[in-house]
Length: 219
Image 1 (tube, helix red, strand yellow):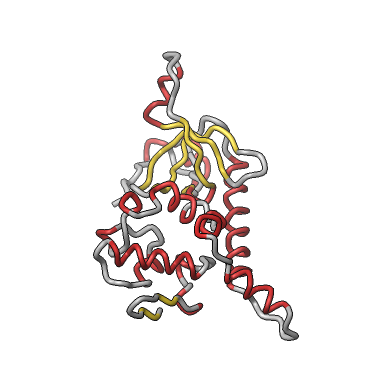
Image 2 (image 1 turned 90 degrees about the vertical axis):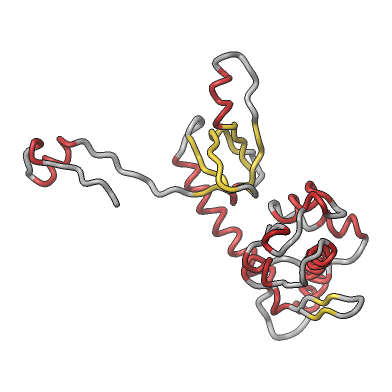
């Protein structure tokens, strides 16, 4: 990253970690917000945590000139087009991609690496979602931390799912409308599948009488 008196230049070497796949123009805007809110220009902050707030060395979405909705779409949903539409500039990453394809020597583009990783993670999440049913409890990563939700359904043709607030789920029984949210698949925390065994099943498996089995608490 090169920071001048009036300019900020993000280089391809800066687009690593959580910034992998992000257009340099958007990262430049993130650095500008970082500076405008009183923090030092430091791209490594976003490499380690893409949604780093002011206290973490980044910037607060609610205090930025573009607002929470804009940055949520950029950071959480990777809807980069809204940036180019709003600021009326060309996507340099796309121009570079076209330029590289015109050369004789094929090269791996950062966008290709990002998409391969993105599709792989989406496939893993889809496999997880295929094993659970509506009404199951899932954990979702939000800006404020991990939260538990009730899984409702997938949105056809989109990488989003519908979930219901865990705390208001019981209100359905009282004919009240629960809080329903639309979240991106990649925000789901995939929990390890747990195997439930009864004492009788353990006894049969290891040939030990039930009365001699004592479950040791995990420390």
